[in-house]
Length: 322
Ligand SMILES: NC(=O)C1=CN([C@@H]2O[C@H](COP(=O)(O)OP(=O)(O)OC[C@H]3O[C@@H](n4cnc5c(N)ncnc54)[C@H](O)[C@@H]3O)[C@@H](O)[C@H]2O)C=CC1
Ligand SMILES: NCC(=O)COP(=O)(O)O
Image 1 (cartoon, protein in one colour):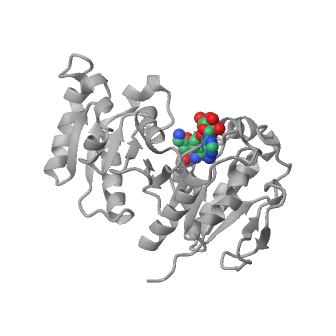
Image 2: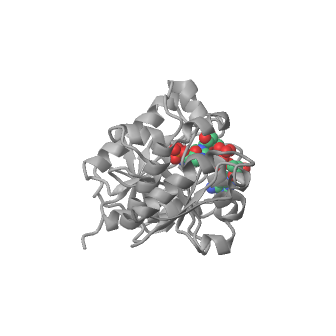
């Protein structure tokens, strides 16, 4: 087996904890290159500029593929002048992955509000932007634990949308697409031969036979039955409140949830430190730590690098499987 190419670690929002996590991520042991402005790294960081992904640097030194930003970074205070460069770094990383120069990308967190206000960013997150850059392909956001058993893997079928819009946006076509993409990715990237997927209901108690909502009876259960007949190992619709305890998680490999918080609250409660966000369905590997920009602690040097280390390892592992 050939060794995967190095992973690109994008800088994300330079006013957040991303730049201080990059040197700490060397502890991952994964070959990676930081794509960003070296001026944003903490004082005293050992870094060396590389011009290509194969370039070697001394042990313990952060390899940096330089992307100059217009402004320095002030922790906790995103500068609108830097917003476009944050977006450009993501696009440049995708290009490096699509052209085979990088084994995949691992993204440090962005602040969606800062990008929207600073550069009119038209996407609610990396996930949607990456799908666009890849040619408007359908994708799925999955967050996967690395520290708990049985594992907690969750997919929000609707992603960054207002809760008021969920019942309209959660459609049979979207759920079926998410099931198919998740099943394929669990086989390809996670080495599962017969993935078991649990489907959460939308309503309390999964509607309790229509007395607390009707979507489960109207279309979720029929869709699950139809796809089960096609060979997918599906369970549900299940009441979301009782499907994340260890005994329940032992019965499936990934849980498909109706909306963002239904999926992300369990994993961030069970394994905030080790959670990894992975985009399924892209033609290249993309992972990310599960946390955000953490402006409240940025620049203090106390940010925990466990999630980005787990994300880099997962990206490298996935790149190896492809
Ligand atoms: N992949 C991405 O680009 C993501 C971006 N975000 C963005 O981040 C921004 C802030 O989001 P929040 O909801 O406040 O979540 P957050 O994850 O940034 O912070 C939540 C809490 O966890 C703490 N925390 C986060 N990461 C930590 C770490 N590595 N070590 C120690 N403590 C840590 C923070 O100090 C804060 O108290 C938002 O703009 C959001 O959209 C959020 C999640 C993922
Ligand atoms: N809450 C998860 C999140 O915001 C991650 O979004 P993305 O930037 O990875 O799409």
